[in-house]
Length: 423
Ligand code: IMP
Image 1 (tube, rainbow, N blue to C red):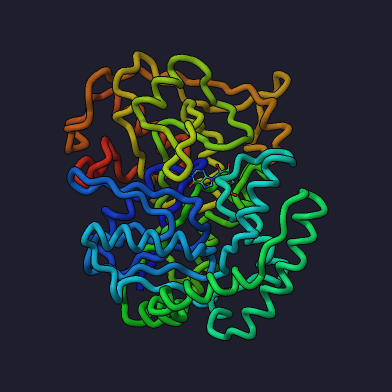
Image 2: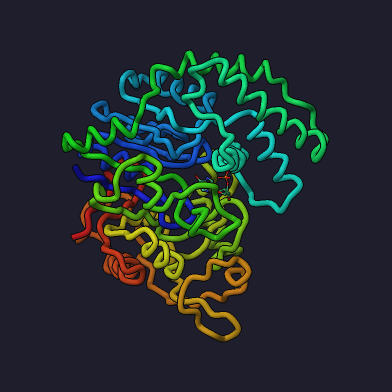
């Protein structure tokens, strides 16, 4: 019966991939509920590193069935290339990957519009994967879903209408050349043949699994502060990575959710534009980036780095209803003399009571810091909570208390065994 939702509680890249892979050992199904190939989930198994964009991070466990739900947006070329990579790495996905027939398709014009718009309008710093434009069409009710691939006439009609409209925008607003409808129809029919074996009604599959007491992990992409409703709008992604998105993005009832596991990095990072109150523009920021390998797994862009922000994460814990907290990349802080945590925001000398969601205020806040003693010893080989230096335990306990969550698990490196349960 139980569903465990794994959410990123910051601006994404918290290390959800590793945690999902780890917890998948005790699950039957891992289901991705939103986003698209904008995500980059890194999973390290032994000496090998895999980066997944669409396929859930449970795929490395042969007993797991992976589901991509209706809430995700699918770029078939990206999906097929990921399937290819996994197969080449010897991972058998046959019968283990199910894709919702209701998921919307990312089209070439979505990617074009995403990239062109970033050049001209106020930059969000998107990944250029067509995510925003695909969700625009979904909510405009003119999007093309996987189910539409089944019928050539319906596909042709819908694509012709979409492309006619997009060609107007591309030509008139951006001076771009027109898209050839027939080429797109041919390419997507080709994709259809290849992705057909994976398509099904995943909501029915998941609800049947729930009735049969199967254990489901709902995997979020990005992070709560990038949520289109609850994040730092407009510098957000175009879906709901927050826990509520799991129910709509998979078609499972809220009553099936047992636990919400929030993943937070021991410091903060953000890719793309938008306010980031604890950002460091100094050597410490640079060293977090280098030691933490803070470069986008999808775009390779350097991530902006800063101190842990307990105001933002407390807000995130509230919106998500986080019941268990996992703190990742704690080892990245190993060398620091002092570690700072933002415990409050001030604007014009006034302390704010809550996390401001309007970016203008968030851009103006001055973080109020509490300093913690560093542990100055490598943690990568520590395997038990009691063996952590006292300063590390104090820091980690403080993150749990400041965010109002129960500290549950700690990660001190990318590998599966570099994980400690908090006792
Ligand atoms: P989009 O999702 O490509 O539209 O990009 C919108 C914002 O979300 C940009 O700031 C991206 O950098 C950010 N973003 C999208 N996916 C991820 C992710 O997986 N990790 C971190 N940031 C992301």
